[in-house]
Image (cartoon, rainbow, N blue to C red; front, side, top):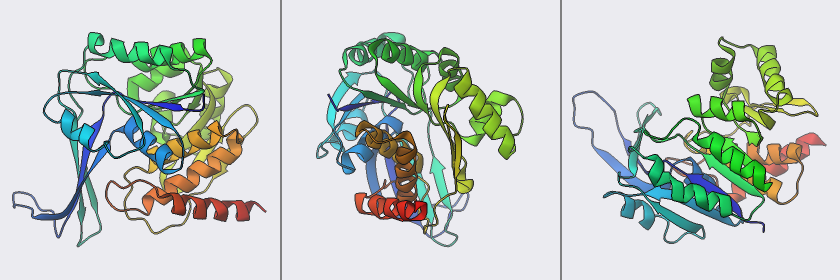
Length: 310
């Protein structure tokens, strides 16, 4: 089965808009409001679908905002499995300030979720018959920090390749468990792991150490404007960021993860899939607000990368 399972334990309704100026105390008049289904796993599924893949999305939903979140997915080609939670789906807000080009992002932590509420979803993961599973996004309050480590354990026993994109203690516990096929920490997450600031060589050393100890078979370290690192047992490769006109940073990481996973699922090499992910991340930066990457932009940028390789 070539379907890719994506998991959204902390989905969101993403609202974006523009304002002339953002100032404290004053009432801020906004326009161009747009709503999208969001949260890491949701965005990854959206990207895979846009690129032509077959994503399956398992997500928690509840409260008064749950139906709103679900309505935003109605017209998508994503196969959806909803799991009930008592709390409401969080609502995130992004404002683009016209006078400065600054982007303001307000991201709530999400509702309290109990272990009992997540168990049906965990059981679903255990029964999923597919090659790739993507667990992406923050853990909602209430869930133990070993939740993603549990998913890693389930996937390793089934022979499913887990792609993990999270942060904080949840990432640290997953690293300690190991068995992750692909992880995408940021520079900051590696510095937290190391306990101090890291220069270029330090980043390479910590990434190589995590691969050597089995934390992840492949490690992609996002470096913002400095590009990204790919580390595995074959090599450590640095790729500079692509030069594009940036409209918004929202969704770039999720676009990278979704694109790289989909390309891997087609049997492409890790190195080529890494470049495809870079193209998707850059393509997402070209779209305003909460928009993700567009297929035409991804293919155009990927073709540019391939030409640079010649």
